Length: 76
Image (cartoon, rainbow, N blue to C red):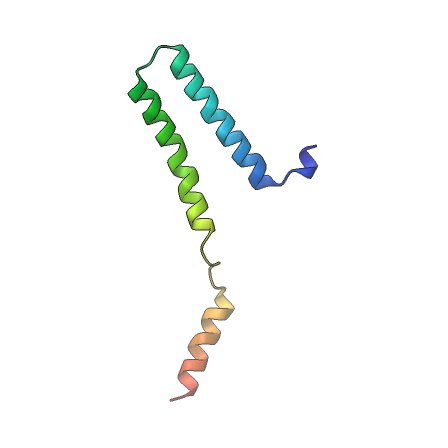
């Protein structure tokens, strides 16, 4: 089964399962609601940042950067 699941989905599933365990233990230990909310936000922010970074355009390769520099210089 693990072979059919892609690594990002598996990592995301483990991330959210761990976050769920942390929140469940926070509620089970009678933590304040603000503490549980802070744990939720602290657990979701890194995942949101990763999604936002991954949604951008891929970084250019070294060859693409060097090609852009040489084509700009040839016109002068």
